[in-house]
Amino acid sequence: MYRLQMTQLTGVQRLLAVLVAGAALFVAIIALPVLLAIGAIALLALMITGRLAISRMKRRYEQQEHTAQWETSQDYVRTGFMDKDSFKPKPHVGQTYDNGQY
Image (cartoon, rainbow, N blue to C red):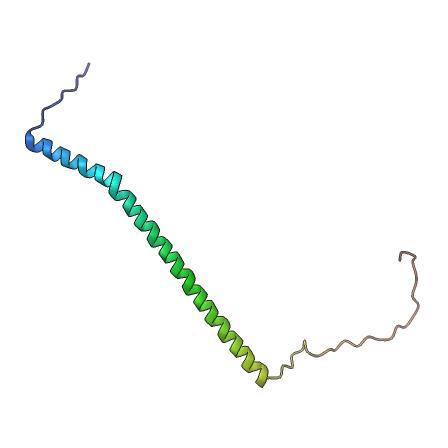
């Protein structure tokens, strides 16, 4: 059927083919893993600095909350509706029936 015919490469073409193949092997074997490792290290550094920044912001917020609570508790007397005990039980009027369950 069909027969593939191999053509002979000249000196310059052969040198160019070897350089292209060598560059592809270099990228596949050496450069790609190094780039992936650098990316992983950068992602780890970003995650750690993000956690530190968020914990610092949380600590600052809690400290502001604590000082604000301390200032308001000294100056302000709370008189909300939950502070008043408006429940006054009435004395029992009428009969109680024992149904024998207890």
